[in-house]
Image 1 (spheres, rainbow, N blue to C red):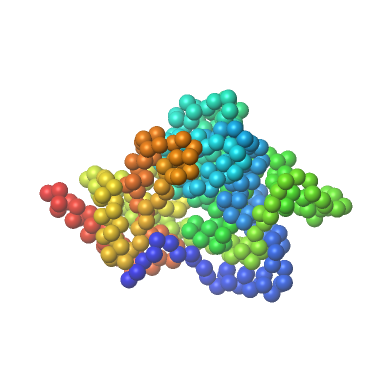
Image 2: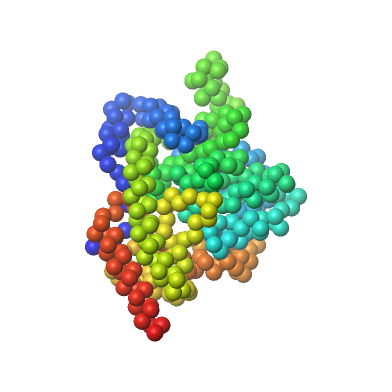
Length: 382
């Protein structure tokens, strides 16, 4: 039995919508299924979105909207995907990496303020594993220093902070619908913009810098080039997949949460014996079951765990190499030891398989092997 880390959940519903889109002959962006997705998002989450070609591109758009430019400084965690930093450096701004909270693995708000300078323009926060950052404290800092806040909510669809959807609290927010996320369209993302005037600007950026969207809404009699932009609009074929996924959101989330809770029930018992550290969900946050990770006691133990699971045909990858330790990080002047918590946890974190279509047999097999590994650890300690 070979068990992958991730597998997209695609049913006849998604296939039906894709075929319908293909048969319509209207397969470029902003057609039937793009509009249906945007309507569905409004219905489910009470917020307007722009469907984007990827979360990376949505982040690029936030950097344009925030008017990041040469020599600006932007605060963000190092423990994140490269896209969070790429959108900053592509505008000529400098990423200022800060350490994470050891409980949540999110950016530590208390480390943000000490990095603010006269050059600081924005804060990018990442809701790691779909669990909310401490947004009240972050917004307080942002208001104090007049900074933009961008939420990289790539992993945080259907996840909330004190009842508010992640991605809607800061000035801009992004979600990902990549194949590895809870709901998918292959490649794709969304952009949320709080300010209505800026939402209209975002529409122009997405449409190659033209006011084409306003033309189709009947606000202008012709459209033309208004500002720099690019083609950030995904094909309606991909939107058709996502529409089917949104219709199945509750089903997908229920299945994922069952798997997450099954892992957690077992592994909490081993956490009590100091064999590992389980995910922490603060009271202000919800759990969207995007990821189940564990922190093992050492890098050696992490490697041993991964190899054990691999020998039993279960894929359990580690996660990010901290950005400040990368070649680009080195060029930006960072070195090992700058962010000790990030560096420590990144060496010891491993992720378990989690996908909606995991069978009962697959889950039981993973549980069996988890027990086998950690019971062996207990015997070794005895």
